[in-house]
Image (cartoon, rainbow, N blue to C red; front, side, top):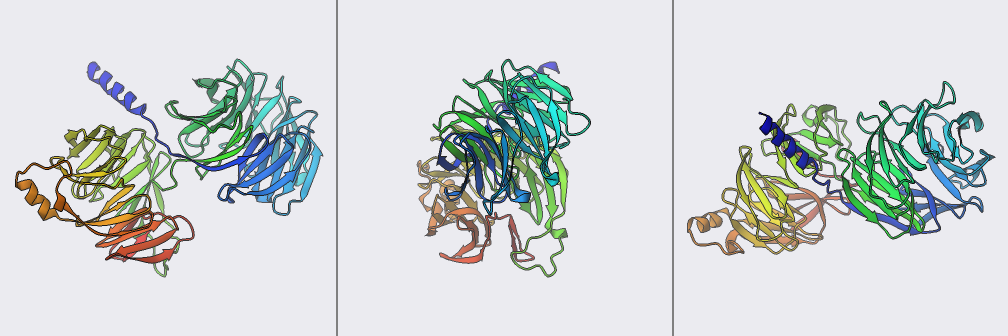
Length: 592
């Protein structure tokens, strides 16, 4: 009925407003003169910075070192880009020249006068030998490096400085420009040099823009001196949303290529991260480096480069660990909001050696209604849960049918059956049986996380409490603040990992059963006989699983180790970070 429908819509709306909870970590902080432009190298750990002082710097964001520098001109260099298929850096400056350098040999490849005023922006075509340049002379020019950097087209139509130009990643025959004439214009590489159409709505000059590269939405984002960020549908030519909050000119905007966020930067010194579906402000970053001038992201990585008055920052948004789960050789993973699957049992393995990369036939299952940040099968592998955007959804593993959903910051399965728990807030944990709420309880402390397994565990910032699934009674409090908790499949052992140490404990099920059946009141620390420490090892666990009574894990040194009886052995030295997926007993093989 109408009343019920109204309630349903309200519930979904409230859930959608929950935050993304993306981690943000600083990778590089490099002081320099004012940085007008940044770019991230796709294969090297490099960030390129174009400086107002006339130099170009290349920083290594792993080592924090200045790797290369080019003295370009005494005047400001406002834009610079990598052209990695040629091992080039291209830059444009206030002396109206474009210069190209080989970043391996440091030699200047080419220099030529390109415009009759300052060069504001460069865009490199993703496949063809083309570069677009935009300038204060109000023109955009197309250059072909295979024809000796011939200027093949001049695009005219703006009535003020052209601040930025970008190719459309979904159709690289089209591009868009932002101008201080308050407009965004969309153009075609061929078929005339006039704009296809103009997007009007900003009240002051437009400084920056970017195309949405993921999914189907035909969207552009722009930022302007009216302190707003606007999202445009370039098919309907309408503004679909205006984001307000910056207190000075918006100088940089970007749709993140992999995460559902929009980044905007301003002369107010802040970077704002907005949810690209709900347009909710997720977080505001301020690194105290004065005005921000440029933002750069790279598809396939979580790194974001920021250019400021006082230097360059590289941050990592989100987690590198894949959102994936394996059950009996069948793998399900999330690629953005798309759910995909593959079956290792159908993958030929004759002659495959340890450490070899396996080709996996993938199948699209469909789109998830939320952005998954965790994904996990239940014990029998028939269903799996995704959690993200402040809610959870349980799907069937075969056909992606929605079995249940609800609010959750975190989700955890019990070892056996279909029992599961959700953490809705620091003060509310719920337990479900057969997809129906069974118990809801408020821990006597701020619940910062939950873990599943033989017992439900809830952590604070200084200890962890284990509860039974049926009555949610405190079985045992242990004074370790865990990063992860991993139970063996038979429930006899549990691993508790802190920042730099992990502990293996034996669980005494019979002692717990006897204590509960005695009817004696349980203290706030629970049952002393519940656990017995077997051993502890100083190592940082990244991902882990149990194979019988053998604990297998990857560590921060990219080693695949196993631990049994208090001794640790290395299975393999990994050449890059890899994450444990599962174990197939019939093959006696681990998969990462």
